[in-house]
Length: 304
Ligand SMILES: C[C@H](N)CC(=O)CC(=O)O
Ligand SMILES: [Zn+2]
Image 1 (cartoon, rainbow, N blue to C red):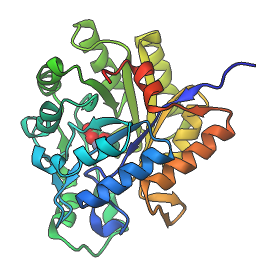
Image 2 (image 1 turned 90 degrees about the vertical axis):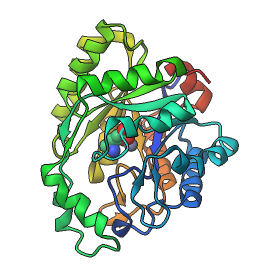
Image 3 (image 1 turned 45 degrees about the horizontal axis):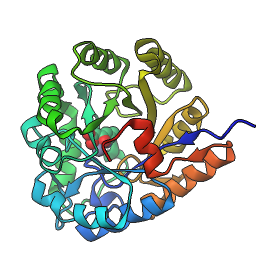
C-alpha cells in the first residue's frame, strides 16, 4: 500500500486585499494576527504567509515595525515556517515591499512573478458601507491599478534577499509568469526546488476553470519538470474548489482569510483555521496527509 502523499498547507492569514468592513473576522491588530496564525498552525498549516496592518485602520503596513508587533510571538508559539510577503499592497513600490523580508530573513518570502492589472473594484457591488475611507479608495482606485513587478523589480527582490537564504513562494497569476520564472532559473538567479504558488481567480490574472488549472500544471511540468513543488490558491469562493481539484493532481494548497473570507456560500469564515480544517478534511478524505512543518522544510529545502 503506497504511503499517502504529504500535502503542504500554507495559510495566508490577513493579506492586503480584504478590508475590515468586509468581515469582522479579518485579523487586523497584532493580537488578532497572532491568534489567527497560531490557530491555523494548530489546524495543520505548515507555512504561515504573513502581512501586517495598521492596528487602528487595518490599512496595509509594510514597515518592519509593523511585522515586529507579531512575528516574535508567532515564532515562539509555533514551529510552522514563516513566509513574509514582498507583495505588500499592490499600491506600494518594491523598495518598500521588500523591507520586512530583508529585515527578518524568513525561511520563505513571497515573490510576484509579473505585473498584472489588479481588479478589486467588482467588490464594490457587494460592499457599500466602509468604516474607513481608504477601503473604498483602494477598491475604486483598482480600476487603474497595475500591480507592478517588472523584471528589474523581481531581480531587485531576488538580489536583496539572496544572502539571507530565504526561499521564495513564486506567485504566478498567469502562464506568462511561469515563463518569467523560467527566465530567472536559466540565469541562475533562483534555485530548485521552486515553490510555485499558482494564483487563480484574481481579476487581471488567470481564471478558476479546471482548464486553467490544467494549463498551469501542464506548462509548469514542461518548463520545470521535477525542479518545482506546485501549490495553488483560489481567490474568494473558488478557494476550496481549486484546492480539491489541484490536490488531486499532486498540488500543495494555500488557504486563509487573505485569499477568501468564506467557509461556504454566503457564510463568512470565523478564522483562517476554519479553512485549514476544511482543507484538511477534504485532503484526508482523498487519502492524503498534511505535511508537518519539518516535512515541508524537507520537501522545499528550507533553511530551518
Ligand atoms: C493573491 C494573493 N494576495 C497574492 C499574495 O499573497 C501576494 C503577496 O503577498 O506577495
Ligand atoms: Zn500575500
